[in-house]
Length: 115
Image 1 (spheres, rainbow, N blue to C red):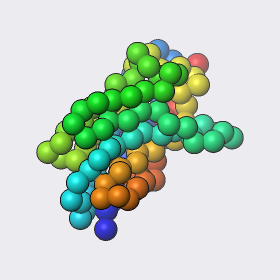
Image 2 (tube, rainbow, N blue to C red):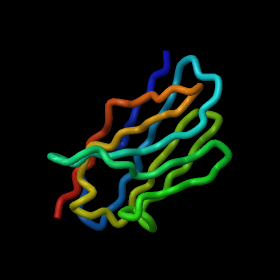
Image 3 (cartoon, helix red, strand yellow):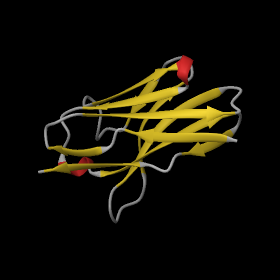
């Protein structure tokens, strides 16, 4: 069993910052990637950022330059530093862990940006 738990969501004013964390635990042999997605009200879930094993990162154009993904390998944790937040960043943010040829999702953490 693998558990994925997100934390750090909350209410912030436009222009502010939040830091999300995602912790993976359980029977994990090897994590290949850790990803962030988000789903705004009434919209489909969209990919936000990826941290690959070894360190390469990729970002959606909508967050590039504002969000930074980082990983603590020792703790199987990935963080998402979100700066210059916009109203349209309001969403439930989900973490996905790709490990041992399986995808594991967390239950999400809500980020609300007030305009």
